Image 1 (cartoon, one colour):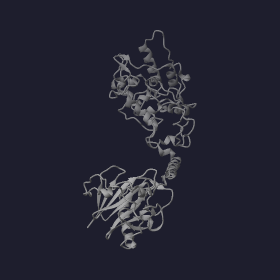
Image 2 (cartoon, helix red, strand yellow):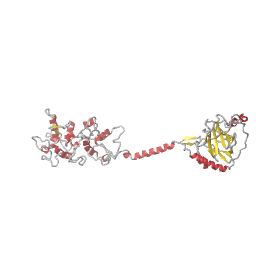
Image 3 (spheres, one colour):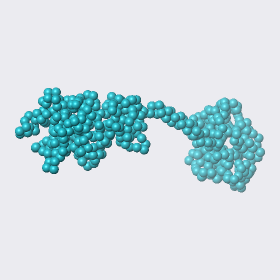
Length: 496
């Protein structure tokens, strides 16, 4: 038949509770049937089991002693009516109701557990609230109402069963109770005990937080590995794609050079903390033969170096190809993007660029600096032929006439004719190379002949034909770097 334990909590002012089972645990652990929440109470302080006809108590925490009627409790003791257990500041009065063990718990602030024995002389034991678990006995007789007498000195009553059997029972009981507890994030100052006690070891009041040094050490190791890896592979650690072959060379390949030195794959040549990328590009690409200038319309539109010369597109990507192809990517009717509030469209009505519409020159012409750099180029001496190519704007010249003079100064008698085109004896372009008739002047044929020179010839800088013959090659007319002393395509000019 299962045993019954009636727990009456005077310290908490709650209704009595009845536990049915073979034993109860007493302590600070939340899984204990009798929870005594006080720092001086061990997590598993004591246990009471029903052995034969007796209820035996055992101290489960020998390092934290408890008392029975003011005397230190031995390992096992059988309880009798009138006994008083002292556990920390709690006093547990023992009595019996039929076959049930009754424990009346009170807390005595500032008093010792031994004071509970003397207190029995003036406190009635059965003046209890009703309980839903068991019927309580009738009120004591008048002869008993005067107060309980102090229990006489008792001799320890040994347990009816061997202590070895009880040890096995409590080991299993404690193990089952501790398995239900979540592990604490705190660790004791002292290490775990050795031997069998490890299975029931739990920390008590000497606690400390988990050491932060291990986290700091492992974090430092991880950071050090990442830093070392970045130091070894910094060139490719953050780049979206490899840089072009032209920027990985260790020696200059072009003559005359267009940069102050070979980049050799360096990231910091372009990406600097205290300098914008455009400024870094310009400072490097400024030599006696080349100046990284930008025309004023592009400056007004906010176009910078990397807009036409993008990087990080792979080792085989060539920035010069991107510059030649990028013009038509922006200057077309399908581009809806605005540049500082202005839009762009397909130029010259979609033709190859012959800048005449309705008999009027729509070409804006060249400013004096552009014109001088276009005429005074390498492999061609303008001085030797300045009488033929004299270019001067007369006061009577209209804007339309002045643009026509500029255009024809740059083409006839100066540029070599492409294969299959009519030419003068020296092989240069003449009037009949583009115009089928002079009177009236033919303005339709030039629209079909511009592409023969401007598209079919391989670009000297790229070394191959970059733009297809059916696409406009903008850079042959519109020079971006007007101070570049190298000619765009020297094969089109005579050698004398």
